Length: 608
Image (cartoon, rainbow, N blue to C red):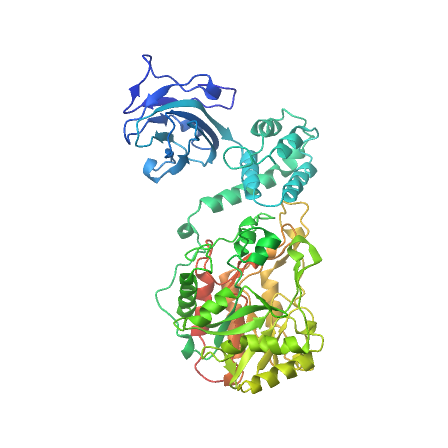
């Protein structure tokens, strides 16, 4: 079989087949040049395609089209032998349409040895209309992966990618432009949108208009970028040197001298409002899975393990989270609380937690008192839902939290429920508001409220706002050198910033003492590329070792507080779209949870 210089000849070996025509079995020719029918016998293999040694060391793109007679409802299966036999290979299901036709297009990784078609159980006749297998250059593979990663994202983002490629001056003529813009057609079989590989291959081989030295100038960068992506995708978690498995021994948080509290984001389930604003079924995972690396070595997207891409409507998820947090010495969660003038959002996980006393973990609230805007889209002035400040709303907010304040698991200081406010300076008259809050708490039979202002944005001395204390909220209020010029940016239109995680650790380690109480907060990492594609803020070089040194120092400093005020905050338990999560991921596993447990376990029992 031969079709152009890019097709590779494959030999079909008949196994357990009944020939429908009195002629020898030959090669399958591409593009319908010939079609051979075979009858499937029960579940026996239809045929095997052997002789792939010539492409075993390359990525390959395969197109496979068949017809069945009569049409079948159940799928057939195409197996790939990637060097470990068919049983450990990759399985592609083929679903014929009502006329019995089926087509699949997919990319096979390095190591392809053979293919095998398995029919359905019913007897039918298969005709192969097309089978093409061609090697893929590293540039083609890179563009394939990039196109698929962007398939669910905005079309404008793909256009930005095109402009980035155009700026490399790889092509001067319209060939590649037509190829990429044609890929916006989502009706292509297979992945949904794939570039025109013939055009791209022509460009790569110099058969199209290429500016002198243009492709070579960035070719090495693109190849290294692609190699990094593929190596990461192919590597199992257990093969990653940084991956730490779950520990067998647990840490009892109630016996520790410092109480570690992790901020908790409840936006991992769909709500009607997000459906309207961001699209049907939107959750935080929508952002997380759309992220792509902006420079070589950029860890994106962040992918969870064990807990997976969970839905907080499922009760077992929070049960597992609580058990995991307790296992590693986390004392409690600080739930972000969304209240907008009497309207609550994302309240389901909190209500589920309150209704289940078996979720044996302490907790408190952080009122996320910002307006919700289209900031993620760059439209900060378009308000989706706004705060409605008034004396009546101050009282209503406290009343909405009253059942939680009375819960025995709620975190208290001096018998007063702790309430964190994310942006206290947005309150029109903060001093008057906190007076109303405290008075209402006393009226409801509580000892009062212990109020903490987050040091995000412009908060300085919390006492001027009537608050009892402040809490750090890194990376807020940290001035860090921008090292974007020191990394190998693949996206020349990148508008974000890259900083060293190590510089953040040093900045917070050198925080001067204040006359007011400031609770320490540590962050395992930060990268909001998922929230702001191409314009995120990334802390490069974050690793569990640096994090452990930071949380150890912060815990030791916290231990010097009086007994009631030994709270240490962590940002965050599950801020996946900001690259700030203790929950295990594919690259590091439980490394950050283990580092947290190590730091807490190593504290002296001395009251200090």
